[in-house]
Image 1 (spheres, rainbow, N blue to C red):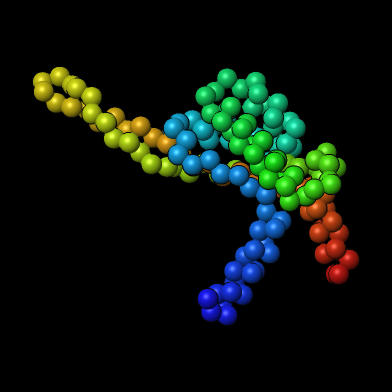
Image 2 (image 1 turned 120 degrees about the vertical axis):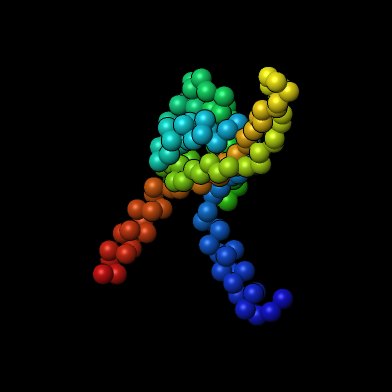
Length: 144
């Protein structure tokens, strides 16, 4: 590996140290239906989001709840010794992108066939800490 690639890889690794994310790939639900649930919890504190997802009747809610628990576990792995309540974790970003679409045929009248598209999606969740962001803002104000 060249020096330039090595330096950029190191910079990417340093940036990812403070990034706490979890991904769910090929979730077999349409992206539109999943976005409705994702919009409910975007920017919300983690404890409140877990409550919202637990009692939401939509099909995507348990899957997103499990993804949120995975993101919390990823945060705890990088921040041992810090309590989750003290860090004031919240859902910084949640993206629902379109995944693979399976195409199927359904019989139709007069010998035709209608196409059925079974959609899937990819969900990416990034957690943030309000406490860390407040410290960064305070440092920026002090330097000005």
